[in-house]
Image 1 (tube, one colour):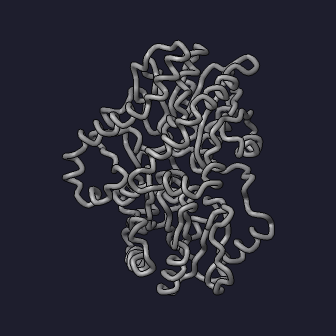
Image 2 (cartoon, rainbow, N blue to C red):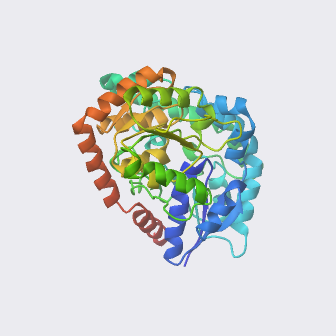
Amino acid sequence: MARILIAGTGSLGDLHPFLALGRGLAARGHRVTLAHAPSFRAHAAAAGLGFAPLRPDYAALLAADAGLRARTLHPARGAAAMWREIIAPHLRASHADLLAAAAEGPGCDLLIHAPTVAVAPLVAEQRGIPWAPALLQPFALFSVHDPSLPPGLPWLAERPWLHRLLAPGIRRLGLGMMRRWSAPVAALRAELGLPPAGYPLLNAARPPRFGLALFSSLLAARQPDWPPRLAPTGFPFWDGPDPEAPSPAEAARIAAFLAEAAGPPPIVFTLGSAAFHRAGAFWRESLEAARRLGRRALLLTGRAEGGFRPGPLPGWALAVGYAPHAEIFPRAAAIVHQGGIGTTGQAMRAGRPMLVVPFANDQPDNANRLRRLGIAAVLPEGRYTASAAATALSALLRDAQAAARARAVAEAVRAEDGVGAACDAVEAGLAA
C-alpha cells in the first residue's frame, strides 16, 4: 500500500479525471488523498477519497468576478491571465496547503499533480518524495512533431503545412513563456533554500521519474520529443457519485425530454464547467439555430449566479443548469461544445458528431484534433451566430461519414481502460 497525494486545480473537467484515478488507486489498496479547491470536498468524499483543501479555489474566484472571467477566457491572453491573476498570487498559500497535506499523518509516498499546481515539485523536494505530473490535454506538451494550436491563432488550423513549419518556433515560444511565468516560483524556491529549477518547464530541480498523459491516444499519440516514460493512458472517466447531479425533479424533466416518445434526439448545447461564464449570446443563438433546423434542443447552461435565464421555452427546447455528460451525450443527435478536455473526452465516448466552439486556452487545440479525426466541425466563438451554427450543423447532421467515424472513435475510446492504464503507470513508477 502506498500513500498517494493527488493535487489539482480547475473546474469539473479538471477534477473528474483525478477522482477516477484516485478511486482506481484506492481500489488497488492504496491510501489516496485529493488536494483540491475547498468547493470540491463533497466530490472527494463521494469518491471515497481523503481530502485536503488547496488554494486557490478556481471556480469560486471565477464565479465572483466577471472581469476575471473575461480575462482568463480571452481567446489569446487567457492562459497568461490565468497564471498572472489566479496561480501566481496564491503561490505561497498553495505551497502552505500542499506542504501540510503532504506532511499529514504518516506523510505520503508519491505526489501526483496537475502542472498548474506549480508548487508541487517544491513540496516534493522539501519532503524528499517522488512526484509525477498528470497532463490532461496534449496542448501542454509543445511537441514539434504534433504541434499544438496556439490560442489566438485559429487560422493556423486551416494551413497545416504552415502549422508544421512554425512548430519549432511555437515550441520555443511556449517554453520561453513558461520560463518567464516561472519567475515567482523561482523566487519562492530561493526563499525556501531550494536549488534553482534545472527543469524550468515544471519548476523542478530535475525531471520527474515518470508522468501521466490522461487522454486518449486518438487525440494525440506519443511523440519523440515528449518527456520519457510518458504515454497516453486513455481518458480516466469518472462515472461515480456526483454531488452536482440534478435534483430528482430536474432529472425527471430531463428524462421525459429525452424519452423517444417526446421526439427525435435533440442537439445538446453546452459550454462545460468554465466557458459558460462567458457565454454572451451563445444560448440565444443556439436556440435560434435549432429553430431554423427544426431540431429539438437541450441546453446545459451552467449553475452560476446571474447565468442564462431563458424564460419560457417552446416545447422542443429544454434548459437545465447541469447534467452528467455521460448520461446526456449518447442520446444526442449532435453535440455543440466548447472543446474543454473533459467535455471532449465525454463527447468522443458518446459517438456523436460535434460542432466545437472554442473560447480559449487548450480548447482551440482540442477542437483542431477533433476536426482532424473527422468527427467535428469547428466554429470559433467570435463567429458563432445562429446562421453560422445552423449551416455547420446542417452539414454535420447530413454527413454519414462523420457519423460513422464518430461511432468508430467511440468504440475505440470505450475499449481503452484509462483508469487501469494510469494505475499501472503509477505502480510501475513507484516500483522503479
